[in-house]
Length: 147
Picture 1 (spheres, rainbow, N blue to C red):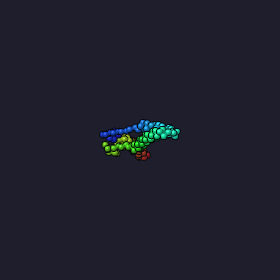
Picture 2 (cartoon, rainbow, N blue to C red):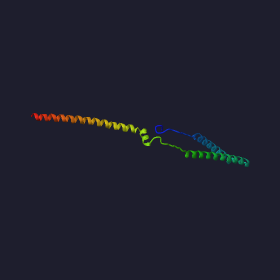
Picture 3 (cartoon, rainbow, N blue to C red):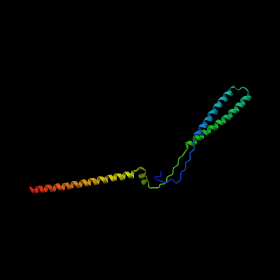
Picture 4 (tube, rainbow, N blue to C red):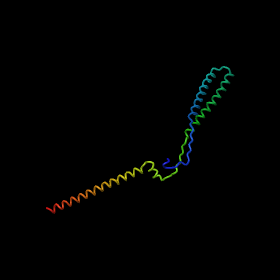
């Protein structure tokens, strides 16, 4: 990023909800198991006084279970609607930034330099060939005049 711009402001905020989620889920499972055991006690209770106490305990447990279920849903909602925001302001023209980032500019320079070198090489060979043809033509011309 520093090749194409200067960082003027950087904010990062994250909150790892993994531990909170796992703890809440563990508590929920624990209370649900406790509720199941107390429901078994309710099935065996015979006195009205015991039934009322057990139902009171079941109501408390159900409220606690509901609370933990809401907490899990809230954590799921928070993680479902996470967001990432990025704002970029151009420092250089985009075309120049692309050259810088990809090395395209250097590649183009190398290709042009290679063509330039090839052109010089071909030109010098053509010069030598033309020179040799002229010398050969002159030699043949003298040979005909002599004969």
